[in-house]
Length: 358
Image 1 (cartoon, rainbow, N blue to C red):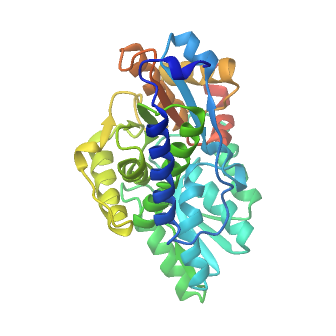
Image 2: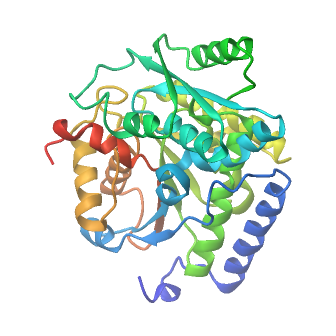
């Protein structure tokens, strides 16, 4: 990765200075939204030299959102850092959220609640997918939720992501609690706006490293992470593509949710939003949400054996599988730089252990 300044697409000093300035402008805009300090920014941006060499380019980098902070980190924690400031300011004593048994989002909500001294109640959806392994219901995120002291409420999956969460919040309110409802995936306007902070970090870090990313690739599902990246990139990395790898096997629904959250986040950050910048790539989710396929397993193995990165089979593993497919299809030149966002999810790997043949 040395000698980058001599490469044909390397940004010159003026461009790098503009990147730093744009990152500072975005950070200043975000400073109007207070956060709690659950995240320890900036998360690392590291070269993946061995994986890049294995693929023959482009130069790949990883943004380590798995190292973001409490409760084994993850991309949702960056959103919670902003969203939960609202909860504290409102005097909430209980956090309410939900997801499937191995939800990374609800694990991060439970960790935040423990750190803040609040009760945590989770609507745990059953029926979205059949348990793929015998350890699915007791290991990984499910184990950590119990460790963090969360109360689990089993509910059937109906396709309505937030209905049961909101109902649980109302039940707790009637019981005298002061609940704050965190939406599925921490996906709302403030969560998306808060996630734009990842772009401010990438812009500053890549400038220091001497490159401008051609693309930022990540897994996308509930939509606010990609929404924040798209809005942030429009402000601080204008020529960088943001590519979401659909992991829900619902690309049309995912894109619609990204657009909805991006519009709302753009209003909060007082900036423009162009929905043509929302790129959701289908075909890498496997047979269904939560079910890994061979490409997912290959991606997990490559990340582990070449870069000592631990990916999960539901989110980050499928995200990398999509990135690998795009590289192999020739999406980028060998002299370009592409950032992969590691959204976390390490605990879920252990809940799939007996089904991965690793």
